[in-house]
Length: 305
Image (cartoon, rainbow, N blue to C red; front, side, top):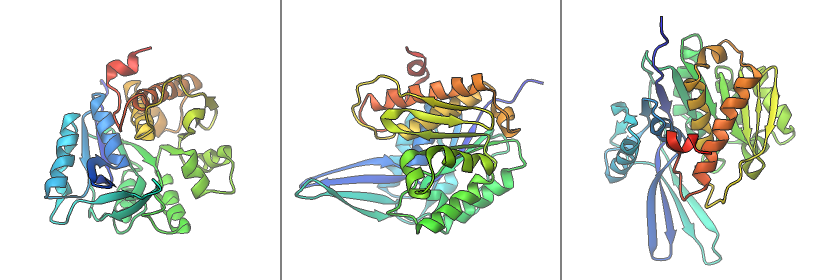
């Protein structure tokens, strides 16, 4: 029997990032899980995105943005509440002051039985009441056939206290097969642990693959048997917006493309496969930082030298 085609169910926040600089006001869709859904769909993975969006102009803007990549917005995402926003107001000294208006209350979450990948993270994994819905989804899928992926992508200005966020992270880590976080996430969540110790923490809780991005210093990628320290790829950086999300979507695409999901669900990945998927993830991030905004790669761009 041939394996079923890969498909993804991504759950988490989508919002409008608003930048106010004097008389100028710019708005664009944002949210880490949405960026991952967009990136997977652009790479050709049929992707359903489940969020909480208002039936308003901002919600429409997010829906149009997702459609550009052929990602499907789950109709259950639409509510009568306003679409969430993150407003950055640039002050006279050029620093930004942030104001968040985020509601995360999706209710019961149900992934398609055909989904081969379920991904969640960021605000959605820590902000109540919806974080409980995400945890229940992962709990219900742990013994299923989908690969479970998690990116904490912490947002201290929005989510609860550190102990509450760590507890939420631990709850999802107990079910996730793949975990990715940044070195900044690690420093905030576990200030007393080294990078290797943080990866060990996730592996000890059940992850088969744990990755830590380190900006210009590349990434650490680990399994139970192997650990890689990989440099970033040469690139002229335009900005780093969405780089971590592109690393995540590239990593997941590579896992699906190589048919590694069953091995990871079983807790096994050999070194050569670990090297291969990490290389794709780093290339995905390189493409994104080479241009403005959270603009992930196409398959052709991933294949380019």
